Image (cartoon, rainbow, N blue to C red):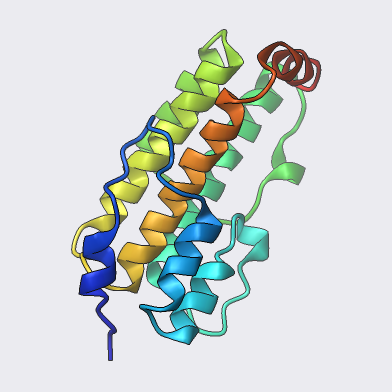
Length: 177
């Protein structure tokens, strides 16, 4: 039976792409601890970031869809970068079942952008849009919390970027591009 966390989810602030995170992921988990089941809290605590980390005991459709999208986006970036550097990208690709035109468009738009941080912004805006798409029909259930958690992680990443030494960060990124 699906658990609904109406009170907890209703109390969370809305997240919008580009804002500062209202709290850290750890603070999110801490506040969730008292209001959601232990099993779901542990699940949120161990959300995989990449497909290689996904070793489910029970398959969650939202996590699987998110990881398939993100992996397909990374694969498309590898193909584009490999083509531009005349390197065969096949050995860098991960298996996925998702192939969509929007993924190719997001990756190509980011790759063509001359500024690396703005290119990363294009990628994360595409990721955010996918999370918005996955949220349809999930309002107060675990899937809504999963989507919230992934969005919070995106905002935290940008908060770190925005507060980092920009010159040093750009020098490093350009050297490793």
